[in-house]
Amino acid sequence: MGICIGLVGLGSFGSAFAPLFKAHPLVDRIALCDREPERMRRFATDPYFRDKFRSEDAYASLEEICDADLDALVIMTQPWLHAPQCIQAMKAGKHVYSAVPVISLPDGNEILDWCDRLVDTCKRTGMTYMLGETPCFRPQAMFCRRKAAEGAFGDFVYAEGEYCHDVDHTCNLREVSQRRRSSASGEEWRERERHYRERGAQDGPMHYPTHSTSGPVWVMRTHAEKVTAYGFGNKTGDPFFAGDAFSNEVALFRMNNGATVRIAELRETPGRLGDESETFRILGTSGAFSENRWFEVRRPAPEDIDPARLPRPEVRELAAEEMFDRLPGPVEEAFKRAMNREADEGELREKDFTPRGHGGSHPYLVHEFVDAVASDRQPGIHVWEAVRFMAMGVAAHQSALKDGETLAVPDWGDAP
Ligand SMILES: NC(=O)c1ccc[n+]([C@@H]2O[C@H](COP(=O)([O-])OP(=O)(O)OC[C@H]3O[C@@H](n4cnc5c(N)ncnc54)[C@H](O)[C@@H]3O)[C@@H](O)[C@H]2O)c1
Image (cartoon, rainbow, N blue to C red; front, side, top):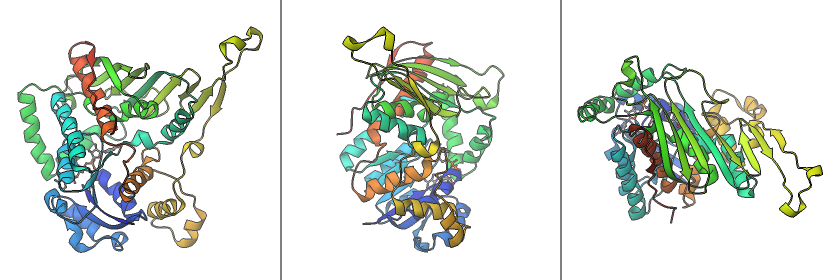
């Protein structure tokens, strides 16, 4: 049976997702919401949405859309708003999808408090929550999840996750920050941010940690127990980093499965550590994944070890196409049409479905949430998983503020 869904936040990111949510075969009706009337108008008048969007389904506030008869809301608002808005939606009887991260605020204790409230709201309302974490639906993560399920990594030993996004890189963070503030909710944030600064809250890139922490945690299906972290503070007086203790932070975690994980959140350095700016590497005792290569060794049992015939690791170069999972045929077809809106029927027949958006993750994220709501199951990145990604960043930042003191990482347990 199909579902009715609402999308809140038609800014830069929400605009990219609206056509995909509308296109999904299990979505019967889509409602749209933004506080900015001209952003709302752009979608309300777009003929592409006409088959599933009614003019009375254009909403100007979260309060109004929470009162509508919808099954689920997709929250794509600014990062400091996510958790309270998701809680409001779940209390109104809606399943929720949240853009990353769980929430980003200058005060880490406040972030942890919101994690607590989110988990509690899911338990009390029975609504599902999914975090739209892009690394978890990149082809590399899909491949590694399959290998982990087969046990091909052996025991997990070490992993790295990183998000290297220099402030002046292609997707310029100064412009992003300016755009997110140039709206009614952006104006309100300026005032709140001033209060955080007045009471001495010190922000840092680990308060937006999800692109780095999620990959290793998602693949290894574990959580962090302890952390030691250090930070590098901007030395030039760059106004972008005003109020931030650090512009770059690096952390080392002890995980519950015995592995060690290094996480880097870097905003003031050009270049990157690997092939991608948002990536991970995972090493186990018998399998390892790094930069689209899979390494595997088939070890003999200890009593069969023969120094004359030692096993050699095999190395396989992987193309994205072989790492991706397949989506159901009708879903692929619908997304292909949504992603090639200008193409006619003949051109569409010639085209293959090529997943796009943050490594191809966007269509998979949309399908995961819609399918989970429609089939009444927990989505992949449910709340218990999402708060693990977030808590790692908060604890790392707190450790860095204490010059590397080893701290415990809070955990809310596994999904019941
Ligand atoms: N790789 C990724 O996963 C990735 C990449 C980019 C952005 N994001 C996330 O996407 C989110 C949105 O980013 P963006 O760049 O599109 O921001 P944006 O400022 O362009 O858009 C946010 C929109 O939400 C609207 N809004 C806020 N509160 C509202 C309310 N109460 N009711 C109705 N509308 C409301 C605003 O008016 C605005 O149009 C951010 O939280 C960001 O972290 C994730």
